[in-house]
Structure formats: structure tokens, C-alpha cells
Amino acid sequence: ELKVEQNPLFLSMQEGKNYTIYCNYSTTSDRLYWYRQDPGKSLESLFVLLSNGAVKQEGRLMASLDTKARLSTLHITAAVHDLSATYFCAAGPQGGSEKLVFGKGTKLTVNP
Amino acid sequence: DTAVSQTPKYLVTQMGNDKSIKCEQNLGHDTMYWYKQDSKKFLKIMFSYNNKELIINETVPNRFSPKSPDKAHLNLHINSLELGDSAVYFCASSQAGVGSPLHFGNGTRLTVT
Figure 1 (cartoon, rainbow over the protein chains, first blue to last red):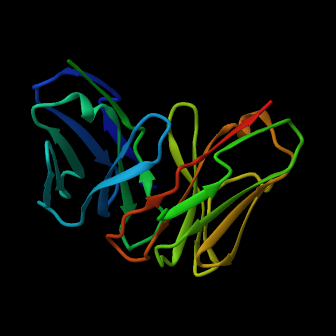
Figure 2 (tube, rainbow over the protein chains, first blue to last red):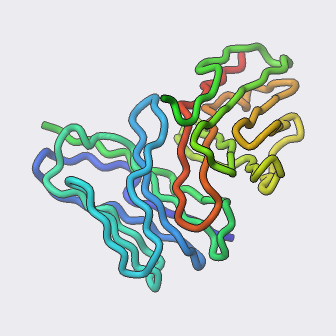
């Protein structure tokens, strides 16, 4: 059974600093997603990673996927307050099942 | 234009009541989902329909019954509500196939008193 673990679960950082959120998954997966959720709001899709070595960047966020290590990372560069949110990774079992398994989320707080 | 819309946004009700949540998507997707987010923000899939056919049915009490009248709509009916049902319920849709992200609705916050 596919399990997804994120760490850290809570992250408090200062503006301007860099940090990385890690997402490990337990069995072979053919797709990895990152979502953002603001308090009381819906989930917004950030990145879709489909192949080993995939790297995607949007603004100060960069996501990568290492399928051999079963690891995805979300790197934050020069954090700003607007990035404060909860970030979720989700993986899908190999074979295209529509059942995504989500990590527990990382609550990011960026302090001025 | 709202892509995935669900109603109501808030639902406060007493134990033992029956309630429904409705969801509609205008993205032309063929797959729809119900997810439950608990108080610790943990997201778990409950059901998924592809073109009106149930394809995912997780271990959910049979008090929960989804219905998909067509591929643009997915409703969730809950009988005999319990305190533990309090959560945020998210509807989502996607196009089946590897790589399509989920598009989530704004959620329905259900509070059972």
C-alpha cells in the first residue's frame, strides 16, 4: 500500500531564507503532485512531476522528483510572507489508478 | 467561472440528521472525487467516479452514499450524522490518465453537534 510522508510538518522561517520540504513515498509511483492550501481555502495545484529527474519551477518554488529514491522535494528560495500556507505532496500508485495518497502537509510560516 | 463548485459551504446540523452536499464541475473532466479533510488537515479519499461509474470506494461507513447523475455532478448524502463526521469535505475533478492534477472545490465545512 502506498504511503506518503512529508517532513517537516511545521516550518517557520524568515523572509529571504531558503528551505526544502521533503516528500517520501513507499512504493513505486508514476506521478507526484504538489498542492498549496491557504487557511480555510481550497487546494491549488502547483506542480505535476511525472518522470525521474523532473524539475519544475514557478517563482520562488522549485519541485523535483527522484523516482529511484522515491523522493520529491519542494525548494523555497528567498521566502516571502505570501508563501505562508500548507503544502501537500500527493503520489499515485503505479499503473494509473486515480487514487492519490496525500502527505500530512507542511505548514509553512514565513516571518518578516 | 467557477471550475468545481460545491454547496453548501457550511453545514451545521445535529447528530442523527441526514444531509447532502452537491458538487458540479464545468471543466469537462470525466472523473470526480470526494475527499475528507480532518481537523489535523489530513486528506483522505472517500470515493471516485469515472463517467458515472464508481471506481474508488474506500473504507467509509455505509452511512455515506455518493451519487453521480452525470459526469459533471457528484453528490454526497450522509445518513444518521455522527460527531466524528465533522470535517471539511472537498469535491475534486480530473481528467483520467497519468498526469492530470486534481481540481478542488472550495470545500464544505460540516459541523455535527
